[in-house]
Image (tube, rainbow, N blue to C red):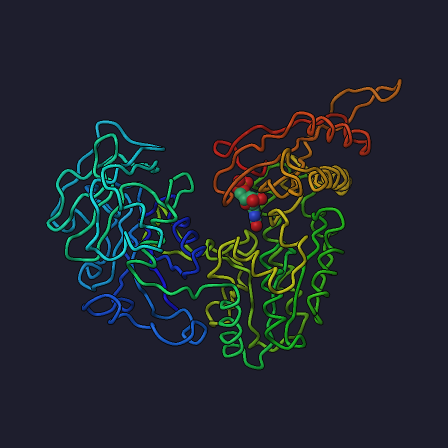
Length: 562
Ligand code: XMP
């Protein structure tokens, strides 16, 4: 399958580059910016001919080979920093098309004899870019039909609003580079190389606020790299089925499911690939789940064809372990440790042969390290309760871990789930933390408080699913929110119910917008919606006396309260 390799120098938007190109139907892989590329690069020569994996069906080729171009990402670093991340220099000799974005461009320029210097003032946000010169004669940027056409036809007249975030600028172009676009602030913004298929953008085409950003990426991917579209969920399923069958053979597979979209999609993929008799699913009901969640999860997995569904009911153990604990970290630690203890005990009780494979719903984003860790490439495991789990680590050592979603982004997992028949309700479900309601009950967690929170949360979420976004018929508030939930505060407050004094718990509602949970904004409800939802909660959940709305963004707050 044709693919674009992205070298990650730690930019916040590296993942976005990958996602945007996959939206175009082309597979992307991200490697640490300083990765040794000896094994993956073609050995010199022109792009195209020397690139492996350019023939045959995408499914037959799988994910190996097929690199058609390389993108060098942005970075929080400056090229002259003593520990500035540097790419494997073989990229400059391999003949593949290169696209440098922001730091990536600056690094290409400096590595090839150019110079870079700090700007008097950092540029951030929308900046107009004027196209100075037609790049015809170069393959790609102006190929008609590929959408770059208009971009290049009227040099000098064409402007668009690019999205910038840089503190340095090019001050001397490396030999061969020509400036074809300049920012209205007077700095080089679009560069092409006269002889080599090298391009550079000082701005970030991957950011949705960048006008024509997707066109520019398409021009690189199709016009310059000549990629063929091979990436789709259908192709992915076909490839994964082949891989899974070859790897697993007749051995049983155990998948730990949480009920979220990731593990449910992984379950669906296993059940649609292997005989159901060989797929074991284990779910732990910690007593810290939302209303009716366990029943719904069981029904959803059975509908997908699960035969061996091990529902472990361990609420008593969790409540006993949490008794008297108030400190958030202490609560998380106890829950994490207990997860591991119960997991080992229950897995042993299944009596599977020791050769069994352990599957997890790890995503691509869980595996990639950006920012500070560039180049160290530590493998991050998704759920907090699996971090350092001896069972997972032992299986990893044996090479018996299966992570069938580890090449997918969250939105792709949703598409995969739909394709494999996972119910819409599950596909659209908001993220839910491993420690469950325990981190949404501040202070000590008790069964009684869990019951109160569960009811209040169900009313909130039920209303979000019923209420449309103002002006957008058919789109519910729930679907336009990244994550919403209720939090029970360890505070009671005085109120009045009829003629009686009421002394009820205070509930906080949280609803955030986000792309990946790393940063989050407050969902801008209409005051009327919030007031009506609050009234409904205090009218139907008798222990709740007062409702507040959390208006904190992340950072500085986190999404969960503990
Ligand atoms: P925070 O609260 O750190 O959360 O802003 C970011 C996202 O991660 C989820 N979250 C967790 N998910 N295990 C998980 O699987 C956890 O321990 C955990 N803690 C937070 C949170 O719900 C949000 O989507």
